[in-house]
Length: 221
Image: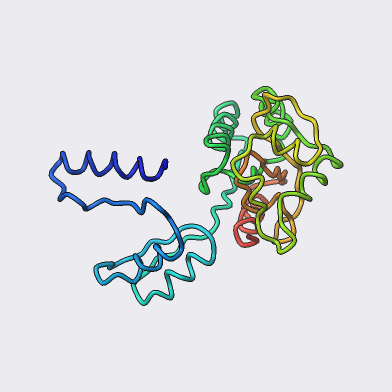
């Protein structure tokens, strides 16, 4: 309903500015069948497909020009040059908007070792909860399904709700859950895209190791 309402508002504004009526539309009852029909319609000239692999594959198989977009899995870097309070606030604001369901929101934070203590202190001041080893293991067990895909039950839930699902007790007002991570890849749940208020935290020695880790995170999804 949010998507349909947004499309309606955009259409109204565009038409008031001279755009032809009907230029912006939305499928009111989204189904794979409806999407397939739209993608194969004779008037469809270009497809931009976001979402899961099946949707992107369907777009590329439609016979029409298509641009596919996969997981965001955005790493954010905080180094010694950062305004730490602003950087932490920006990450938390992004990661808690709509409970982290925006795929462009941060998924990992990579810190320069020299500012680790200050950044952690600021995250705690702004309501973040750092998971200990046992808590992180419990939470990791519910982030992915047995086939390695994201568990839909955690998507869009608050930090407190996700923690409760895993049997971890955190303050109700917790903004984000943060787990220390040392590796990235398909089998490391925290290094992957998490559409809820959970962040992986990497601590690296210098700029070179930071950049290598960022690339590892992006390629590991």
